Image (cartoon, rainbow over all chains, first blue to last red; front, top):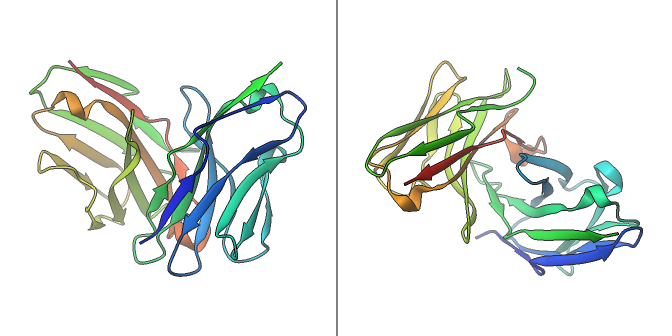
Length: 114
Length: 116
């Protein structure tokens, strides 16, 4: 069965410092992986996706993630945090069998300090 | 439309009443998914539609929950005899073909259901 584990439920960073949100996945075959962001009272927005092309994936708003098969990880990074990055972030693995439904991680709430 | 539209955005209902939640996907998106986001439970898959058929209903929590999709477009999620544990944000998403093929989903803003 597919699953994702987000290792931190809360992360706090100062504005202008790097962001690292950690995600490990479990999959019996080559997965499709996604990061979504949810701002307060807003819908889920796709940040980036990995679908077996380049292992370093660039997304919107300066975020990127690297797929590391040996470590079964798909960590999300950004070189310099902005106040507007404060939100909840979800790592997602897609079930590739039939329905392609998403299996969500439990989320990481990012706080950006001025 | 330009995005996935859900209505109502908020719904407060009395325990025991039935509710209908509507999702209007992006035009041309054949795949439609319902998820539930509740405190302490994260995001749970409910049901998947491909066109008008639902090949995966495995996430529906009980027989009080049902969903349909008509014309390959609008979907309605119905909860009968609502219970307090049904309180959550119900999210709809649509996708061109199948999300695992790399398109990703587009989510609606959700319906916040509160059962009192």
